[in-house]
Length: 274
Image (cartoon, rainbow, N blue to C red; front, top):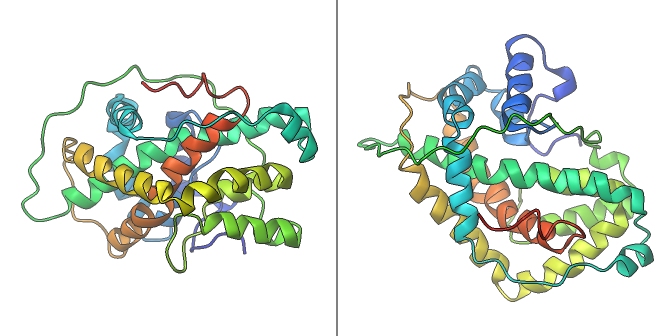
């Protein structure tokens, strides 16, 4: 099981798809192409349509600005940072913190933007869509792309780790959820996944994750209505694919990833609200 939905792996991309993947990594400033973009690549013309409409809004700073507004409006719980002793007891070596930070930062950077952007595409494809003014852009981040470890297949993980990935993926999800890539990416360190479960599961039981997920989608829809790309009709199959991700994987991972960044050592300052 390399991906939970049909998708083009980054290593297998060629031609125009490979070029767009490289452009996505450069514009986002991260070392991974999120699953939704790789999924859109299986629909003829789907990736070209979505990225062609959205790229200027990313590159000109409008989408990062909208994502910052989304983050600022999320009511996330205040939790203590995971202490070094807990990481050591869970078998997470000190040298793993850098890659873990990079993975969380990459997904926390791209998912809020993707939620706004993909909600925008869905809204703009509706009859009678009325565009509004663009939010003030933020400076485009030209930072060097941070390399990330390869995204492992679920089958490559130890059975207990794979089971924990699936259990984490069920947090905030409905039936048959899309498997979020972030948990697989963190599968190199099962001790960290165990601590993540200990943090997130009680919040889910109290309804906090569901509330954060709903708020993220509502804010994305509100912000998305302000962003007016001039769009041609979407290729067949693209809109259902966007709905599947905004209503499930990306919608729930926005608050979940933000919470993990807040409790992970050294990231509370990095995730200061805009």
